[in-house]
Length: 256
Image (tube, rainbow, N blue to C red):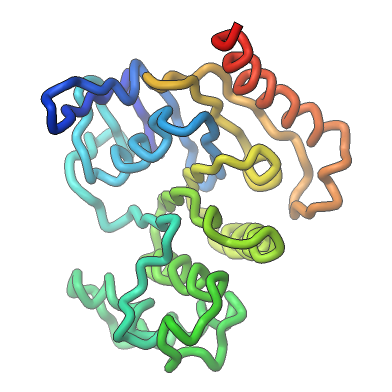
């Protein structure tokens, strides 16, 4: 569905110095596949998502969806950020429907679909609440519902649970898997958490320190539906160990 072909990205700082974020990244994500991206801070994970979203252009290479080059944001792609970024003056229902209102894509059944989606995410009865009346986990559920209401073929998630406490993070991981299983869209999920990546993903892409390159793609052969009970399994530990060896092995080698 989406393909990165030899992607490179260089930014210019305010002082004019070049910062190479990505170098020669090639990756394919299939229809309905859940792919996690892990790596050290500053390795270009978030930049890769912004390229997929059409928010920034590549310096080299191309991003393609169904063979067409991505140059601008597309209606079939939705993004969830680390912060929920809800409109503070709008209630939950209006926050969820806001992107479709903005794009002129409201239909007669849009609000009904939004209510059903909120109910699926455990937010029935909160439609008229303001963001400040919700917990951090509930706000992030609203943000995910807002993205899902667009019925995207590709969902981009940039550390969406990074600001949550450990218990809420686990709850949201299972909630995300449930929503994804019901819709089977493609997901690109950036995280710093190796266990989170293994729990969620079909494949885990491991990136090198800047300039970011793909050093490994780990296939996760855990049965679905997933649960935290699988963390003790041999397959879970094999995947997590392989990812850690790449990330911490490289750091140890540089330190030496």
